[in-house]
Image 1 (cartoon, rainbow, N blue to C red):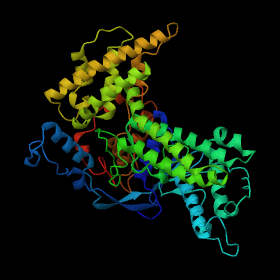
Image 2 (image 1 turned 60 degrees about the vertical axis):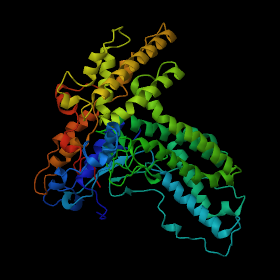
Image 3 (image 1 turned 90 degrees about the vertical axis):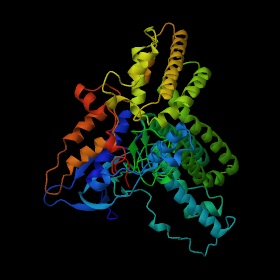
Image 4 (image 1 turned 45 degrees about the horizontal axis):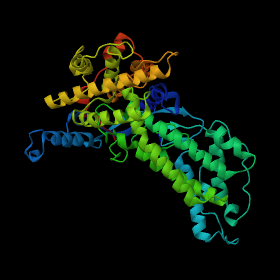
Length: 537
């Protein structure tokens, strides 16, 4: 709304999502409080949103028998429709009046890659202006930098960010060149030390501070940040989270999830899925590791001026860091899939090969059958429990299929495929289950052989701890914020917020019978294409 205010709807989403991520085991900023401007004298703001008509209006997608698709095979038609459905979005069509609110978030720091990028660009501008590091002492080097804000008090009107303690007195750069005498360079190096102190004290601050080894600190920070950002993004894939706008300005060097605005948890799997209308393909679900790598590349470029000023070779550092990052970011999805399949503990080479082959068959099935990311993996965990290699249970692949597809409960509730599987797809799925269970058995037998005198965690338990049962689906959040803000003169009903907050605290547990019945289910069909639920601006 460009008025600098946050509204209750976005604040509720932000508060609950950040706490859900914490309990899901994904590194995140935390929500400290949520305060609403309520009552007769409360403040409100107008926001573009979706009318009831827009929420009920379905996008005009082709059907399987659409004559425009007759040249394609059935499998190709399903893939085309699946991709069109994932990208079918629209902008809001009305203005709504909403209560104002604010969520206060806390973190060891809120230093973003974009902050370092900004100060590095100022160094670059100084170099362009002064040429070869020779500064004109009579020139005014104030390029408008005094307006820079080194720490943020508020972010995009969506929440409060707080720097908890100041960094100790920063070291003065060793004056060895005109560049290092410049204010632009010294501010960049000071920000580096601040980031090291706040985020990577043991790795990048303490070993280098006394000797003022800024190059060593920068290299250590790059290594540590790479690991944290990779782990964060891998966590997003594991729990089905799409950040939505994962650029360098929304990427903390500490590898914590932030900017809970255009986010969303997956209902229907598609590699390009995203809730935000502006996400495009580059911020889609399975493209998040690539976006993370791009952000890390910006971080590398931002610290090269410091590394070079202290005697490092920028070309060598760039090549080495980006090669290392390319490998770990590209491998992150493969590792997540192996973990979710329960194949992360067996012979590394064999299990990697088996998992890759299973995923190669499973991914197109999830995509074209519009698989539910959370339900599929949790149902597979129940299959692993019922036919656990640890118990020696004899496999029955037909009954495994029934259990996976929710035959023990109403199929429209827990069947992880929103579209009915064809006969061919069912045969493929049965083949996948058989191959997976045999690999799972090999993995368990290997673990038992490696630890004959120790208790081995059964595969179903390892799977349970990485495949959540409960996530914050958007239809749940809509119910929570709609009750909380029914109108300026209507008292808010916060019962669903408290209920979801309790649900978030144990996402891997079974929950109460009431929670199981209400929240362990597919998204209602009408929410999958509705503005404000399936997508938003």
